[in-house]
Length: 217
Ligand code: ZN
Ligand code: ZN
Image (cartoon, rainbow, N blue to C red; front, side, top):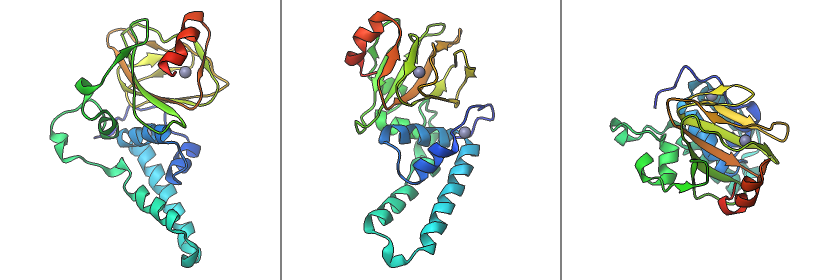
């Protein structure tokens, strides 16, 4: 997939380094891998971190490298960063790493309504963190909320705005305890995002608070 020059919100170094070192949860790793397939800039930074990691390991005594570390390194070489799926001739909406979790393109997503016209589909990953696809109808808002941990939101289609900025296709918002926001999908096109969280959100409204255990959000 070709990069989008319009991407303005990127991964930070901490996330890229953790990903390169294999330390991210599966859910966060999927968001990072997906952004990297859309963004040349972050892919180049990731490659430099990986090269750095390789150099550090080379400098160590070879015998000191555990088999697990070696397996992790080898696995890293398999990350879907350079994946150019041969089936890409067929135009797909979902980037390859997401499509792999969905088991198909957008039409294969099993959406569940979460209220206010918003739909979600939780993707199957380890339970340390959760990742979901969100479908927010044009002009519609996600309920006002704060964060107990980190939330990564990557726009796949459409755009949303919150008090901080506008996020369009390929843009990634990194939210933490310091940010409370109310993302609103832009008018004109529904917004589809990939969102990962490592702790339950802190909703302001009563209804979302009551419903959140049900939606694992
Ligand atoms: Zn980027
Ligand atoms: Zn949020």
